[in-house]
Image (cartoon, rainbow, N blue to C red; front, side, top):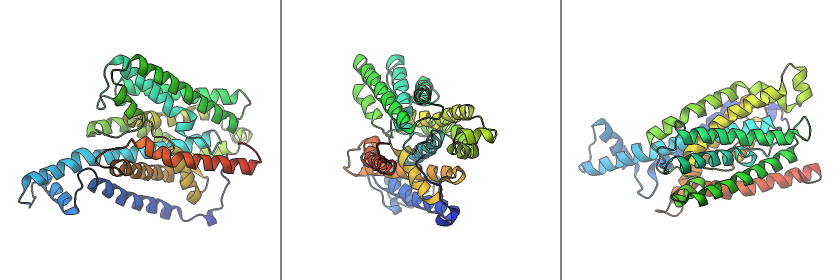
Length: 359
């Protein structure tokens, strides 16, 4: 992996890193609550909250009711879903990078996101019309999203291992990119064959949290939480995998079994996120790298910091998507790709310079 161990003395206190990320998330959430096609002032938001409790003081009850609906029915569940999706991609990205000992790995590049999108689109296209409320992890789309994501990750892992016991970074990246391209081609074929909801599906594939409801948020949480908990509990095995398979085996760890379990665990939050938000690329790449700069490579610190960093990135990107050209809402995946693609190229160039050649 490209990350180099850093001494703890060079890193700020872990509690300070977590507190700073959590503190930065608060104004980002408030920005999302107050801004949008219909901006709200803090006073109007307060009246909306008081309206729900039956203690509003505004003379215009209708305005207070509208404010309450905007905040608690539309914006708050959307912001919370953005935070959970970002956190899921952040922690999954950190897990994939440790799992494959490759700092360029993330759910998008490895193929997990595109595999989930293909599986979900197949379920939607051939099991009925698209409904974003139906597009939850409790229905067929979520099941096929999970299956597609897992298949893509395992295929990339198998291909990379075919060139040696330890996955080659260059081989893994090329395998993941090839699988993503293949899934994208199949996805395009599905949309051409079944084009009844072409525009809506295409917009969803670019990444969107539009139309988020509380049931949709709640349906996505169990797989996200389950996979994240397993990853958190596996911080020590991830640290051992960074030392190489021989070192891990000498300490009693089965590398192949551990990688399979962690790949399965990381697929849960990724598939859940993709099934409710579409493809949101590069969050799983940027968040772990930003967190690692302050925490070092130890996963006990890196994983929670990556989750908070991913949540912050996703909330900020969604706020920008909603506010950059109001009242038009840009796809969330476009915003993350505009920032993430140059960041990936920067990492690729830096990696090439350090190794004296391409990856």
